[in-house]
Length: 156
Length: 342
Image 1: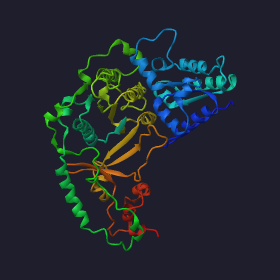
Image 2 (image 1 turned 120 degrees about the vertical axis):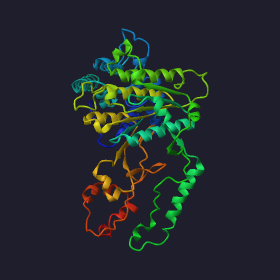
Image 3 (image 1 turned 180 degrees about the vertical axis):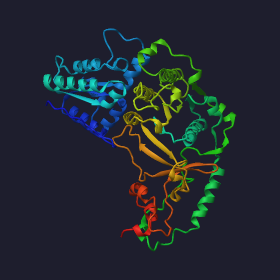
């Protein structure tokens, strides 16, 4: 509850921890918003299956909100013109503004009526991709701060 | 996405690049070649010819015969501790049938090349970018390349979008010297480039395209020119596999007697970990390459025995670091009898 954990790996690969947390929180019955920027949905899904969790089913029943960065950016760049009322969460590719991403996170973790999940969880894999894609470090820090405030403090 | 760091003069990375494309021709895959340096038509004319199995087998057979004559079966007297370790296989044996081998002294015949469908992208012949791409906020050369790749993928059905398309094939994408000034990017020129994000954005979108389709890509980059460490790290993070080539030309290692059999080192910085929790790390991390008259081989770094009279070698300090990494085996045995510790 109200915890912010930063996973940092140097010269090695810490991604197994991401898989662990994902399956851990899903099994605990929490509502999870997973911003997956580095790998595709099928990669996480296959590994989660090995750990005993079915991501597709979690998505169906609304427990998991999955933002697949790689796919969304292709839709954004090569797809049809976007609707004006619904800015893509990956808008920062062109505008370097992380606001749309934060709104996406906030909306997906706000409990809807009829939701019986335990506390909301936000997982981001990983933040350095945001830097690679043009967001300034200050913007990324702001994003973290906003997420922390809304997820940890307001939504608990 | 295989990312190759070029060696200083680009000789060997070019060779690897051509072997990758040649493999595509031999396997019947479609090819997409992009370059800002050489026209893709010229690149394709210079692909190495595949070695027919019998000629390669003969060459390897000669080598194997030479090795056997030294008779490793004799029990070792001084280094008896190492008796039980498996005999180190330095070069690929005839038993591994994965892939093909190429004869770098001969060019691939044009008839063979014509059997596969290939697409090319030569930056200087491309039209200037379309207005929609302005929203991408990326170097125009890269943006044009991405558009071109995406068009080919969707037109030829590599992304499975059209179920009626003929039997599925793989697209091999080769991009030469990405990030160099010829692409209009100054990431290789200064520590603080004007647009530090173009290269990484390009790689991210390329990764998305590769994940969504049946394609594989090899990129060569003059990494020794990129001074900004943060960019190199991000680039490494965004690629699946990163291999660096370091050639000995012009460096002090060329005259180092330890490396006399080899032309350079291969550094494997990252291995792909797709669809699994961790990756399979091989038992040895020291690889070197050599360009023989016909063959370009990558072998485990095998230090010859230290038979000199001097007590210590001048290069010991340099090697101390890499010596620790060498797995216990023939390599450790060769460092010097004085350093063996029982």
